[in-house]
Image (cartoon, rainbow, N blue to C red; front, top):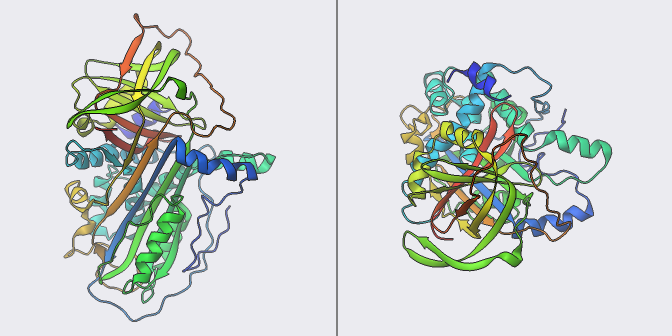
Length: 474
């Protein structure tokens, strides 16, 4: 698909970047006392996703230079509704979803009959930031691996900025602050680069990382336990304590580590009634097991079905969806490994408003520390090549050979009926005019393995995939 066709298909913050300061300008927004009370409950009970990605960068030549303080001011994130859009920016956004499904497929294959969860966006975002630090010989290969071949560095940066503006609801936050009303932002995204105290972060990279990715810089001593503690504390701070032990040690050659954390918490728009939750059998690949099934039934449900799957989006109160996709052959891992951005768009665009019944289990998944290096190398990411050292000269001021040494991620999810009991309002999605009604009403019984895909809307790329996973045993 051409970038221009993709576009047809989709319809100043002043902060000092002070090394050793942990500043999260996306998450630290004003909250009312009411929201401070409710948010921890929502994080515990309804849907809580948290992910942290760590990418250590290595060098064979430690330097004795001292760290420099970089007094930088951030430009505002780009509002997609207020700026110009070109085909390349749209191509980057679409490419992020293509990368999401290719990475999910590569990693899901190793899950076997276990549950699986990954945040591909949490991997894509820091890799997109590293486009700004990659040498000329490897930059095009990195862009190609990110499904953004032929796109300029500037357009990647602008696309990332516009995504962050939309995904973190900066427009809604602005309205809430202007008119002084409480607003719960369901998604928080944080980026940081941890730099060894004996090295100097390159000013050009630091400025772009701040401007387009809202990335902060933190000085640590990678030769000591202090670096491990600092990274784990940062992960905990940015995931409400859900992930606090992603790193146990660093390679002694580490000169920097780039990190991303995503935290999501929201209520369903149409909540499940806990009184109708029943205990029944779930047929997992490793044998039958007991599960608690949540029931949703009635009219006005968006539903998709073809010869391979049944699918339904569960909408969130403040926007975005979690698609539940049930394969008819029972092989959810196989479905996710074969999923493409094109097929996902087909599911999204070809559903109907229907009357029917959804029965799905509550589930909770916590991944182990996932090693991503091999999968990323297989996808063509060139940054792990020690001989080529593609990040030399782009990340730190010293002209030392620098490359990615490893990549790890931890993710967790909890799906329940309602969320907080405060203001428990049920809102039904409005049916589309003239939409056909299937006969008879559908039944979607998720008592066999299924796929989930959590996405949130962006202006440039439509539904941006944030998390994917497989529920093999709730």
